[in-house]
Each structure stands twice: as structure tokens, then as C-alpha cells.
Image 1 (cartoon, rainbow, N blue to C red):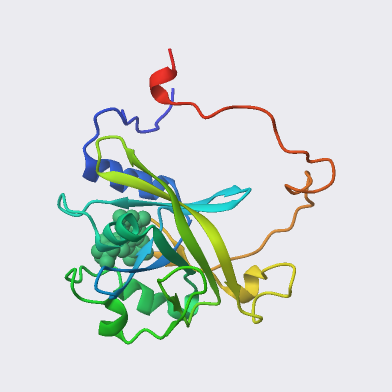
Image 2: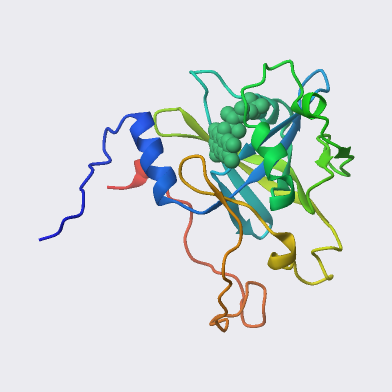
Amino acid sequence: MSDFVYVDGRGLDTDAAYRLIIGCVTPRPVAWITTVDAQGRVNAAPFSSYNYVSTSPPMVAVNIATRAGAVKDTARNIQASGEFVVNVATEACMDLMHRCGEDYAPDVSEADALGIELLPSRQVAPPRIAVTPVQMECRLDQAVVLGRGVNTLYIGEVVAFHLSPQVYDGQRIDSVKLRPIARLGGPYYAGLGEIFHRPMLQRPPGGEGWAGSTFSPSIDKKDLA
Ligand SMILES: Cc1cc2nc3c(=O)[nH]c(=O)nc-3n(C[C@H](O)[C@H](O)[C@H](O)COP(=O)(O)O)c2cc1C
């Protein structure tokens, strides 16, 4: 016997599924993504359905939903240009980042409207957000339309990292100095709480003895019995 609430995920409507999944998958890092539209306007918007998904080469993925059936500006720009920059959101820029989540008209640049200071990128057209200490220039690798078509997963190769010496010592990024912000369920964010240490139990990828796996081609759902 259990007093757990059971929810059948099959056929859940989008709103109910959203409410549940953002509470289940938490905390989430926030990618503050810059893109450029066909007129050269700089768009900036936050996304927390985001993570790294590959190290060889480095890749990140972000899920962008449609808004009332229409493609969001960030998705439109990525589709058209194949380029975006992930600026890592931190405590210092939380409020500015949060305001970029507002629904600005497609022809309005959040960067202009909010006076966001930008820095040029080296390999892609979208600029970087100066107030963030870590920025990743990305080139679209693939866009995967998911499920019923509301969500599309944009997978990008990180073609350049920009790392502030305030958080990077040449080897590692110091998470405490970075002060990343996390998105929780509902209108909540969190900073780093207590930090726990445990010894590493495996060699990191690329370490000696890690020859790379020969296992496992990609699996498509339609190929499963
Ligand atoms: C912290 C935060 C995280 C968000 N994460 C996502 C997300 O992962 N996917 C998404 O489609 N929208 C997400 N949003 C909403 C978008 O930021 C919002 O729809 C924004 O207006 C999109 O801007 P754009 O049309 O300029 O691309 C998030 C908003 C906030 C404040």
C-alpha cells in the first residue's frame, strides 16, 4: 500500500504535463540564449529545459516549445541561421535574464529594450552577454521535433567557449565562483546551497584507459518492437 498519487502520463494535456515535469526535473540550469534575426536584431531569452548532451564533441541541447502554436523568436532564429550562444545565467544577472522571459514582439530586440551589454562572438554571428562569466558559441547540429510537435530539441555543437578568469583557472570552472542560478518548479530560482564532496569513482571521459565506446548505434522508436 502506498499513498503516492498516481498520474498516468499517457495522454496528459500539455499544461498538466508541463506543471508536473518542471516540478520533477529540478533544479535546472538556465541557458540565456542569444540569437540574431534576418534583420540583424539580437534576441535574448532564457531556457531551462537545457543541458549538455555530448563531450565528443561538446554539445548542448535545449528544448523550445511553441507559444500559442507559434514558433518562438529564438527557435525561428536558430532554424534560419543555425547559430546561437548559450550564456550561463548566474545570480548576478538573474533579474535581467528573468525579464527576457517576457513575451516581447518578434521585431523587438530584448538586448536593445533592456540595455543588455553585448560582446562579439568569434565563430558565430550572435553576440555574447557581457555580464555572464561563461558563454558558449554553438552551431546547430540537429533539430528534433518531439512528441506531438509542441516541443523541438535543438542540439548544438559548442564551437567556442569564452571563460572569465574570475571563474576559470585554465583547467576548471569554479562552481562556487560562478554562482550559477537554477530554475525550480513554478516562479522559483535557487542559488548553490551546501556543496557536498565525494571522491570521483570513474575516470573522466578522455582519461587514460577510456578508449571510447564501440557500443550502441542510435535507436529510433519506430525500430523498436
Ligand atoms: C527561467 C526561464 C526558463 C525558461 N525555460 C524555457 C524552456 O526551456 N523552453 C521554452 O520554450 N521556454 C522557456 N521559457 C520561456 C521563454 O523564455 C519565453 O517564452 C521567451 O519569451 C521566449 O523568447 P523569444 O520568443 O524571444 O525566443 C523560460 C523562461 C524563463 C524565465
